[in-house]
Every structure is written in structure tokens, then in C-alpha cells.
Image (cartoon, rainbow, N blue to C red; front, top):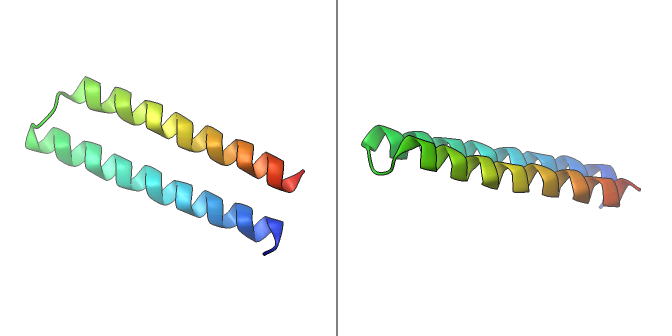
Length: 63
């Protein structure tokens, strides 16, 4: 697989993971299952790991 297509796929999968996480957090807040600040903080941590992981992997693959 070409390196560029690998990175494109990685970014696409990362975007899907972030979108699903956002959907989950909004649903949990709407249903009143967990407090909003805790969920948003957790989502921010997971989003940071996803974004930084995608950036680092893309950098290694394209170098």
C-alpha cells in the first residue's frame, strides 16, 4: 500500500473514531447518565491521544 493512502486511511479512521466519541458523549449527556464535565474531559483526553497518535504515525510513515 502506498504511504500516502495509508495516511489518508489513518486520518479517515481517526475522524470516524472522533465522530463516534462525540456522538456517544452527546447521547450520554442528553440521557443524563453521567455529568457533562466528566464526559467532556474524558473525550478531550481520548481525542488528544487519537490526534497525536495519527500525527505521529503519519510523520513516521511519510518520513
